[in-house]
Length: 601
Image (cartoon, rainbow, N blue to C red; front, side, top):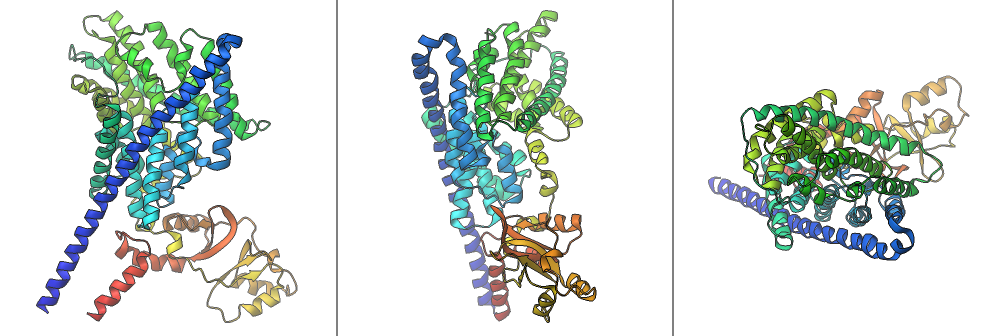
């Protein structure tokens, strides 16, 4: 017996070591893939920028003059719109909410095609002058890489989520040369939790991706700025006031962004796939209408550097706050593809720079360096819009490599985040999900059922009732069945309703023997997809007071795949307590096999 125990303990330790090794290898592979993806994406942006503005300008400017700048974003929109509309709808917009939704309700599953479509759509959008950032696409591309690898290896949903976070962290790390910021971004925003197992994998992936990016892009910080030490302790009061301004502006940014989406969505006479071209037209007109207008094109890192080194005058920084805001909300509202992070940094730099000029003019002995406020303003706007102060502080420190401003960054970012959350409960990423009916915070609450998918516990072998059956015939066909609810299907086996034993019995008692079954079914069905977690199914059952849900294909809500009942969920809950941390798909079978083995021993 003692020997058997030693062997068992040795096997457990061996399996644990094997799992840890596998996690490390996966994290490194995802980091490498994301790092190369980030480098390739940046080269792709440069290629399209050269194609549109340099070569396109050489062809168009002789005949059109500066008005060729209006046509370039339109051409980009004509490509981006159909690309996202017909090939991957989730590639539209800024990307991060789609990753958060995949982690929260789809077990981390992201379609592999998103890597290609998102890269092309965002590179074309940015390269043709769209006012968006490259970090959102890189996060979505890296997350899709992690998800694709996880799906190919058939690991558990819990492990796929960790791999998605690895891709997100690697994307931020490679984009901004900020590996710590990438880790915090993935944990604080994508996962919404800090756990030991996730942390190890995410750190490894982030460091690997940053290393790849440094090999090709150099190891310098994202922004090369001079050191800005805190000249006077009382200056912290100015930074505190800047935090208030950043919070208010961040809320304006969020609200105007989604108001722009509503405005473009309400325009029904223009096809959805042509709306990015309309947005491009507006951006082009905006760019040529103001002296500093062309700075709104693309990501705008060059303009940020000028603000951080004090090479922009106050009039320019003040004007660019509004111009960049308009350009960004038009680009994304019309259906362009790209991130909201870099535009937020741009506007934060201009807001902070403008405030710095004013503070320096009023108190030149205290606010000695106006450009320092530009750097801190970047962190303040991001902290307010994303409501992620820890990520903002660390990321801005890594991006500037200026420890002298760590106290101002902390003051501004914390105040901005707290006040923004007070004014607007949800951050710029969560608002998009809430508008779709997904309460991300509720989904993230601790719940063993959120780690079990509907597909793992649903009943696939069904007793179906044809829609054209007479009620009397249906009643006879279910006689003696142990089930209480039955899907009603058409001749093409498409779901058209669901009916219960009690409803059939009541109809029989009312003399409706010859009436068609589908006359009793509710056409407004509440359904669930096979990739959703059981926690979502439970909420639907509770909200609509129903005891069973048809399980349908995610791409076709009429294609019936199974049925989920309260009994299935209760059974899954008991088993979920045991297999919550299992690494592999088919966890229930593995748990049962382990239980049988234990009993045999």
